[in-house]
Structure formats: C-alpha cells, structure tokens
View 1: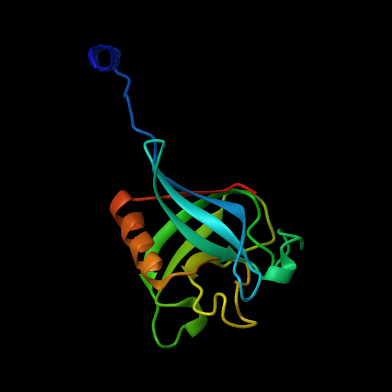
View 2: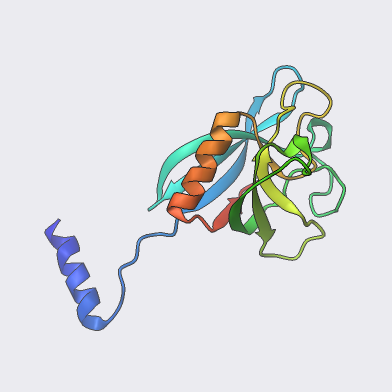
Length: 165
C-alpha cells in the first residue's frame, strides 16, 4: 500500500499520470456449442482495470461458416480477429430488423478488412432455428444479458473490443 502511494506521488511530481487500464471487451471462441443448432459459443467478456467483471455467451457468424473467410463481406463468418472501436448503445425500433433485438452497439474495425456494418446485438433465434447465429456480428444469446451489457458499456464507457481468435 505504501509503495503505491509513493509511486503515485513520484508520478505527480514528474508530471506523469498513473492511469487505470481502459475498460475493454474481449471475444473468444469456446469449445461449447448450442445444443439444438450446433453454433459455437463465443465468450464476450468485460475487463476493467485488468480484471474480468462479467462474461456473456454469444454467437458470431453461422454454425456452418465458422471456417469461411472472416474478412469477406457476406461470408456469414465470425468477426475477424483484431481490435475494434465500440460505439454508442442505440435502441432499435419497429423499422429495424426484429432479428437484431431491441438494442445495437456498433463496432468498427481498426484494421483493414472487407467487413462493415458490424455490431453487438441480441440473437433472438439463437439455438432455435436455421436463423440461429449472425451474419457476422456478435449476437448475445440471452435477452437479459444484452440489457446488462448495454448498461455496462454506457456506465464504464467501454470503447475497445479485442477479438481474440
């Protein structure tokens, strides 16, 4: 405790900031699958100050397209690995596709790729039918989880997503 106080004092004296790590989301594929449709389950995690705060089960792409070119538009593949900017939480309305659920969090790749119009949303068809999975976005499986994630993104001002694999 005393050592960290001294480091903070030295940082102030030298004009350097001792900043906490920026909150970020990570997405990583797991070995688990949805039982009815076979979609791989991805784990979307929120990290704050290098600690994992919460995990959310999600899908990305369609079950049969997990090995497709992840940089090609229309491939139905999961998101390509890399760093993304996380946008604002936006409510969706009656003119938006029902398959996106009630909320949208836009994500923008910080690297060159053919993919665009990406986001985090609810996947209402997850584990239910042939529409299970996404066109390449991150689709949360649980409706309550989507509301929880949206609230955390707003409260913690999350602006970075790292797709791991």
